[in-house]
Image 1 (cartoon, helix red, strand yellow):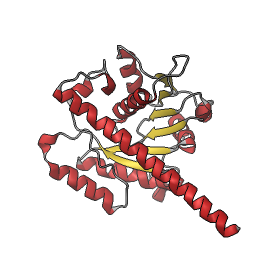
Image 2: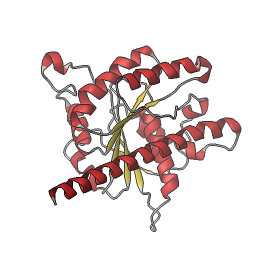
Image 3: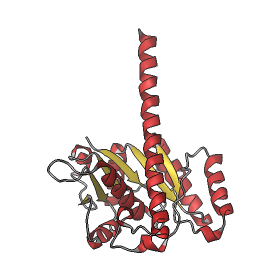
Length: 249
């Protein structure tokens, strides 16, 4: 049964496609391939703009499978049953619908609202990328408070596309904003590098020069951190189940 990792933020331009593809690439690099040569991991694109699909089509070598689920409302509920260990899902943004004033699901009633709901019903965790820019804070809050937390899905915020020349204070301020609200935020910060915009490669295919090694490092560090966090949560749940069983006994 596949583990489903949904990359989600209501705001566009925060790097959902970049993170989906490169996290998948790192996972594929670590897991290797099956005996039949097929990959253990896949990227699934639920974004009607198809950015992840376009970038994947440009790759000189494809280390993972690519699935277009952007129109497949009928079958999307079977994603976990596909023969992969991990599926990273690139998602679209969506229009703001305030559930506090409308009484409606903030994901809306259109096709993509249906797709997002189905994905979140299957999600093992949600990765919430955000920028250090002020106009990203409110959409990130809405994503977490209106969509993720009510569904009780484990999630982690990751600060993405940070230009180091901007100054550490922007990272510290964004991290503090998350921590004040109790949002788990990755220690790893994914820095902005020109090489990330090269559509012909993912991070596992970067060259062994200083800049590209640094760009690669951010994704390996985040993949390791996110994986360890997931392991900690599983241990916590198992421990909680064991304690409950002891109480019942």
